[in-house]
Amino acid sequence: MQLAGFPFSRPRRLRRNEEIRSLVRETALSLDDLIYPMFVRHGENVVEEIPSMPGVFRYSVDRVAEKVAQVRDKGIKAVILFGIPEHKDEVGSDTWSDEGIIQRALREIRKEVKDIYLITDVCFCEYTSHGHCGVLHGHEVDNDKTLENLKKQVVSHARNGADMVAPSGMMDGMVKSIREALDSEGFTHIPIMAYSAKYASAFYGPFRDAAESAPSFGDRRSYQMDPANRREALKEVSLDVMEGADIVMVKPALAYMDVIRDIRERFLLPVCAYNVSGEYSMVKAAGKLGWIDEERVTLEILTSIKRAGADMIITYFAEEVAGLI
Image (cartoon, rainbow, N blue to C red):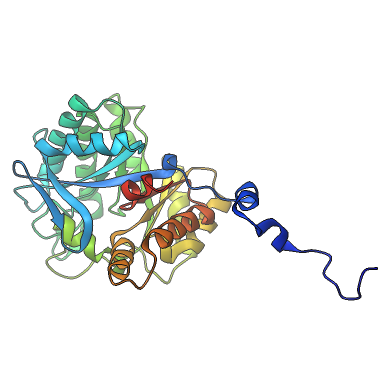
């Protein structure tokens, strides 16, 4: 006889052991989901760990292909490249030089590693003497003059072997300008992964150390998004979609899960999320102190980002996660 009030439904039945849990699991994290960020710097025979990002290194051009091959051999299929040039100037001209740091890295990787997908970050903050993301007019970034330089940068990247370009400067109209520039030079096959909803976040601190890209004055709040805004992200994404973006991105990831979900529900394009440096370094610091189980927390974070709706995740954990899943 059924007792009054006795539960008819027992969800715990489907949690009893790992076999049943794996059968009913809704979200599966795969190496196919992960993109590994890499820093390329000037010099020779350089492999230097970034103090604020344990386990993450800067590589000189002559050492980067070796590392990319190691990453590829672990099952990671894509990397995104960030450059630190020897010489910076007011406009970041290294970004469109065929002898620029990224261009030389692309050629070196292409020569040594055939089966890896190469994405280039497209911006100026690492390359300008002032650390801002474009051409300055006084203390303001001149949006439209920056667009002209972005065109030169993406064409140079494509010419030297990039598979995809990822503009991150949050300039108005950047996707349209980049699409037109690529198409006019015959690179119609190169996709654009737009940093569409990039917030002016405090989580970028370790990256600025890694890329030597901290602004020499002010901040980037006049062009990156206000962390308090949610609806604005949908506006930014819709503009990038109309301008020809192939993939849209939310950056950072962990504090912006609601934005990832909103975008996933409203747009058909693939969604990328950037699990940024501050998110990485906090886990590393707490793990080192023994306050958390670092491996479990890492997998939980990445699974949660995917559960929120990301199709792909840029993460400094990618290489470590390759040994866990």
